[in-house]
Length: 170
Image (tube, rainbow, N blue to C red; front, side, top):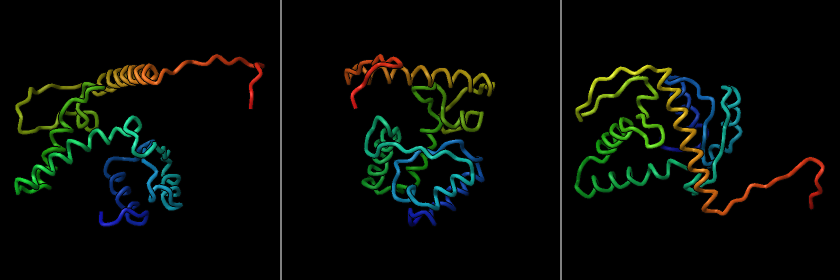
């Protein structure tokens, strides 16, 4: 993509959605293209919920933790006078084939319902898509709950008890 404004972003999103299907939800950092009327109309026309997160806040933006090692690989390739685009493709292949810590399943396996082949040796295992989806969903919920409990402890968060009819100050 040469530009990230809405007229250039919509065809890219359309190509991705045409290939993989329409998502239920798109999460963005609410950057300028995602604030446009064109994007809002595109999302509404396709029945996609647009959820925004707080920019530059790692707890809300998981892709930030992904970008650090990716950028390190690209910088290393450039310093070693290697093709950084090829290095990025290899990094992405391996990242997508590596089981995620929360789900214990590789992102590519979740997306395509099969293991993707890499240069590393693998065992050939058949996966039951429905059982896989259920177990991944369960592990993801458990991991989310653990992360919430940890964040609540770190922030010394307390649960509030409010009942109907109780007086509150405005």
